[in-house]
Amino acid sequence: MHNAAVVSAMSPSLAEVVWSFAPAQHRPPASLADVPTTSDEAERLSAELKRAGLTFVGPVSAYAFLQSTGVINDHLQGCFRALSL
Image (cartoon, rainbow, N blue to C red; front, side):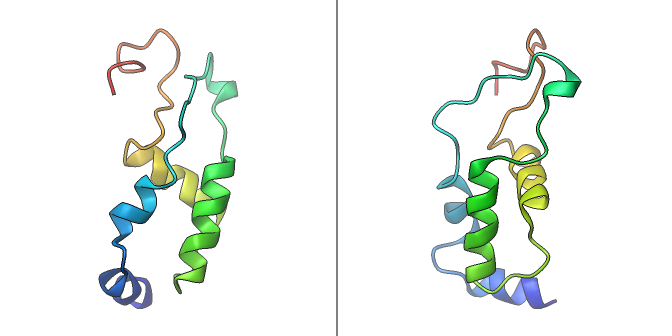
């Protein structure tokens, strides 16, 4: 509940904060072994969310969130979705 209260009171909004950490360029990984678990953007997003008062938002969780929301596209090279997102 704590994080939900923080997110609902955030200004700028969570969406604006998250999209501000979108990488300028991101190359699709060649194989599953090449899919990272974190990035510079995720580390900076994690730090920003912690500054805003959220808890349990480490860089690995932040990276997974960036993936799940489509901010970072980690579909493998050759996947039809790699370039269409």
